[in-house]
Length: 78
Image (cartoon, rainbow, N blue to C red; front, side):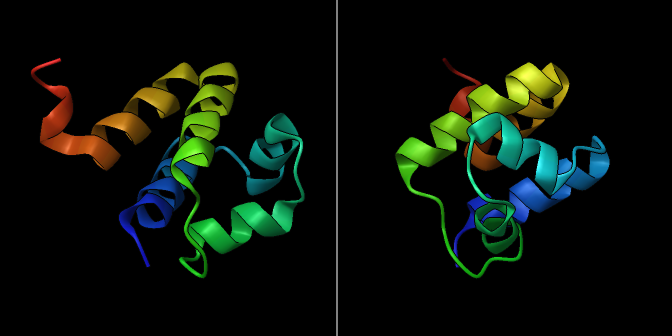
């Protein structure tokens, strides 16, 4: 599976954001967040944007870390 789930799991753990709280912020079932974080399913590009928005509400520093780790070098020149 893709990089998004791996990065999401790291960020959730590091910034102590529960899968449940992210799911609640996204207004989805926790199973979806579990599948992404455990690399059983990849979130769509649109969903990645929604994840960033939800993380921004929960913990802005977690959103920033997610974007930087997921997009890596691509964000430095923007």
